Length: 508
Image 1: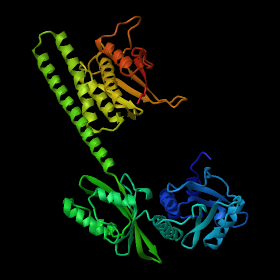
Image 2: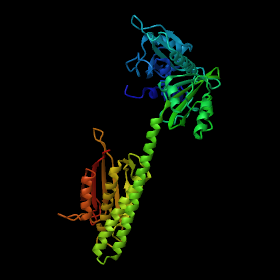
Image 3: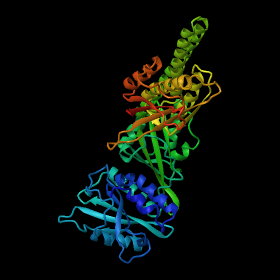
Image 4: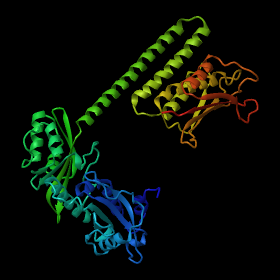
């Protein structure tokens, strides 16, 4: 199926509550942890029809999600999401669904010599079965296990007990906003009820060693280690952090010391409603945070450059204004004013880029403001009404400056030459329409149409002035596009207007 099978089957099911659906989504979003700890492939099964949730007659099951372990080799190589259940597995899953008991199968459906065992675990919430998980694990892997493997399996069993009762995961308790979330292979600590470390995987030992924790970890209080690091570094920590370090609260946090950073995630373990232990996943994220800081520094530098360029351009504009006031030639003054307008347009673009440093720039507000300013800055006493139709959306920054310059020149030209010999109180209407069509290959292009209700373009051959020559150069050279001036489509015979059509590819 080329759709999200999990959402399709669950989101509109009338037999499940909204909380049931949200919990199943949260489980699938986090169950890689279970797969890694149990050294097993996981498959989530759900009735193939809505009525199958409550009616047993003819009930079959469909695989809604699948997880493969990163701690051992996978046994379910084919993607089974969206598939109907096999007959041998169906008997197990049906028993787990109806009787709400864990069901084990010894090598059902496996060729001899058998190599796989399957366990079906019902997921029960408020007394109702909402799904069944099957664990597929290798019999060959059941050699004499190491202490780490035994601990991993024990942790998996504890978590699966909570999952079967609908008690884990609890999305309302755990904040998931930290990047670099740890996984089982990154490092695992197991804490007892008092928050003392009873097991530390080799990667967990290495991660805390980066923070300067030299002594053996087992038997020590993780909260005590956190307090020692805080005293050594003087770094203030969240008041809730001790609750996480003692395993009392499901949450994520980071410890920093000696230039290193380790992100931690705690998962309290409950049995019969009582907390008896906790898991803490940890990951050394020193390099991630170092790169984050470098990117922040780079962004700040780029922002400062845009700010300084804007200031310098505004200084140039002020100098041009001063020079134009001293010129006797009206033609010279007009030329300097046009140059000043172009400089101020570029300065405004740099000011907008300095406000945000995303890979793409939302230019709608910038263009709406520039439309109004271009009409006001035109060398004309005439008032113009401007309107933006459609949306530019997100555009690569390298397109923004030439595009704004082109729009500014075309609008100013329309205001200055659209209604010659008409009284100044006659208003000119300028409309900018934008569209972003996509071709069959998924490539987007920008289609812009600037229309006015002026007298239109001259008949016959006409030579554009310097401003429109600049426009053509920018469109072809900077935007890799094309632009043309066409007669307008206004109903007024005396004022047919002008259409300026610009097409350019959107290249990231």
